[in-house]
Length: 116
Image (cartoon, rainbow, N blue to C red; front, side, top):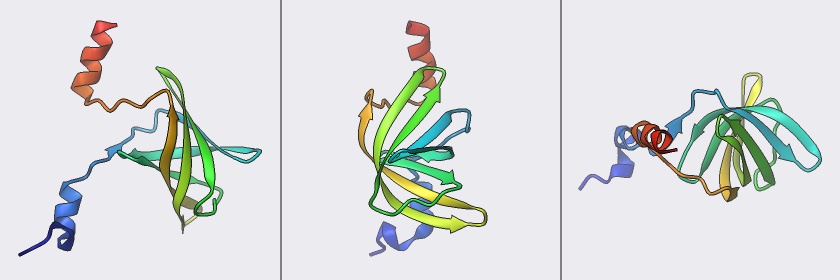
C-alpha cells in the first residue's frame, strides 16, 4: 500500500497554506529589536517569511502584520531558520493571535466585505 507521505507529489498537491501577495507590511519583534520581514505564505499553524536577520530555533517572537483590515499581532515560536543567499527563510508556529485569525477563501472574503 502506498502511503501519501511516500509520494512528494501527493504532499505538494495537498498544500494547506496560502501564498501571500506580499501586500501586507510585516514587522518581526524579537526582544527589544524590531525589523521588517517579507511574508511568503500562511499555513494553518503559522507563517513562512524571509528576514535579513537569523533567529534561533525555539525562540519566541511577535509578528505584526498590517493590512487593509488593520493590525494583527501573532505570538510565535521559531520552528526553522535556514540561510538562503542573502536572507534567512524562517518558519513560525503561531502560539497566540490577536484578534483570532479567520481563514476565508477569496469568495468568502468578498461575500464578507459585501455584508459589512
